[in-house]
Image (cartoon, rainbow, N blue to C red):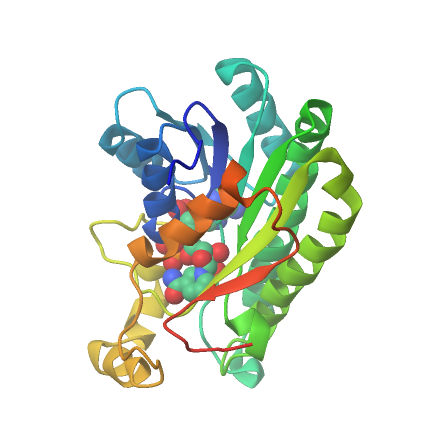
Length: 261
Ligand SMILES: NC(=O)c1ccc[n+]([C@@H]2O[C@H](COP(=O)([O-])OP(=O)(O)OC[C@H]3O[C@@H](n4cnc5c(N)ncnc54)[C@H](O)[C@@H]3O)[C@@H](O)[C@H]2O)c1
């Protein structure tokens, strides 16, 4: 199936690491031109260099900061011919810890990146998308946001809010040909080769998910394995494409059957 992504302009927040990296490279392989909007410039440039020549550019962006996000959208429009066709909200952050043991600073970081990052990024792309009468917004949620995951209380809340906000905004902007959908992965640990220094997988999170803990977790998945970043890419590409023009406000888990809602 030709997804019709050739020549489309996409912004991928958090596009430098793990899932975002795979999504960026997947979009570029389909012929899209991609702006990686990430705080990790070095890792973003590394991913841009892996993509077909000239298809991916790195642009320093802090999704928690409105001015930074608005400047990136203006950059994408100026650099790539006026439009932004696709936004993939992939920047995210958490560390698994019991609610009773978690410091406030970690809740605040989760809410800043996962909730405000979504709000800032979506609001900033809606102006050009409405102007154009076309847009695809795909957000990376989490199965945590569907079930309320153990040791992920506030993070589950931020991801549930991404799902609910996507539905509410989808109702509002559908008349302009803009769709919003959410893809919910399960556990997909990053590797040192494909994760940046700002990645959760370069933090304590990696020590929490030891090889033994990962093996144990895989038993909770009907398909009996954890996911890989490449597992998530096809669903994101489809929802980012014109082939999905009649799908909006939906949430799809790509998690080996971990949740079935
Ligand atoms: N990997 C998993 O197990 C898993 C499971 C479910 C959902 N998710 C979600 O998928 C998304 C990607 O996860 P991942 O494992 O690839 O994460 P990751 O930590 O490896 O990558 C996140 C990227 O976001 C960037 N980033 C962090 N703060 C930012 C900010 N303020 N502004 C812009 N960029 C920022 C980082 O530099 C990094 O490149 C996240 O939204 C995460 O919540 C991941």
